[in-house]
Amino acid sequence: MITDALLADGRCVDITVQDGRIADITPHAGRLGETHLAGALLLPGLVEGHVHLDKTLMGLPWRPNAPAPSVRGRIEYERTHRGSLGPVQPRARALMDRMIAAGTVAVRTHTDIDDAYGLANFHAVLEVVQEYRAKLPIQIVAFPQSGITSRPGVADLLDAALSEGADLVGGLDPVTIDGDQKGHLDIVFRLAAKHGKGIDIHLHDRDPGGNAQLRDIAARSLAAGMQGHVTVSHAFSLGTDDADDFAATADALAKGGVAILTSAPGPVTMPPVKPLRARGVTIYGGNDNIRDLWSPYGNGDMLERAWMIAQKQGFRSDEDLALAYEVCSTEGARMLGLPTHGIAVGAPASFVALPAESIAEAIAERPRARTVWLAGIKQ
Ligand SMILES: [Zn+2]
Image (tube, rainbow, N blue to C red; front, side, top):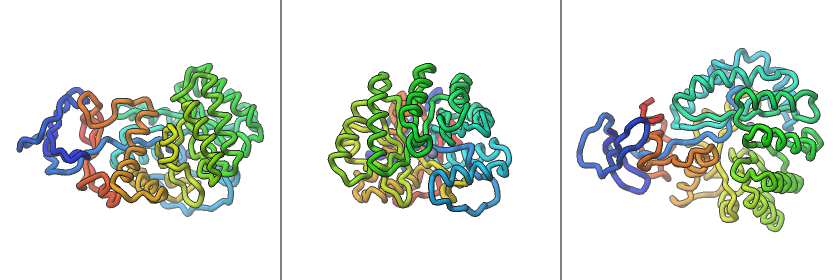
């Protein structure tokens, strides 16, 4: 039993956990349970909607970042230097442990698959994921980091990864990287249909061409009956100032059941949270690159990511800050297929306690002191 927990709605409660799930929630009656929280805030666990476990440098000595001006430039830099990073497993484990300590209770990771590495990173990440799956749900996206149609053999490698346990098929900038929107998306949707698995496509394009690709993906999702199983990560082009283009694209995404993942990236536009939700589009959060050859930033903390989303969206009210938390917890859980996520009877007992009076204060302060439970077990 966990006693004297403050919930986001202001109730002070005792929580009974049984078989990894919340069995009962009752008003706090002055009891002392196995864990007495003394009024600490208890929140639904954070959900990491987009991370790259195989890329991280976590656990290694600090390595200065080498900036590259474009996505293609960073891909080439990584292809040249990734061999010097050592095995994937210890780095992936170090990052998983950081993420869990920060309150993350479910994860979707992308894993590089390309013509040079084949399935090596996928196999390494699969090994780590299988170790951690007893504690928390983790999905793997087979991610073609160097392209599909422009790299011979990659389509077959993605096919093999899906046969060997990848949960989703990825894609990457069909126009900018492969120069073949139709060919790229044909392969992604064909593989998803063949294996009965979801899709999560990286799309970095910022110009109106990005929104045209989003509408194509939405139409394909609708035609394939894949609503609710397709995500486009980043989708910077949704930050457009063109209201008509935005409305047409958001409506297409809603109709096609395509969700948007954002990491609230640095000096680029981001998909606007409230306007997308107002048009029926799901948007959820992820850290993306965490201390790797792409970015020096990140520590695996999704509460920090909620703060970044809130900052970048100009959120100030308690209600809006709570929305930023939802984007980084409940909304991600829904897209990862975990509909009972939250602090409610019957839900998995996977949550985080921290010293704050409200979600708004938790995001503003991002306190380091956290107590985390995964399926009822204190970490
Ligand atoms: Zn990514």
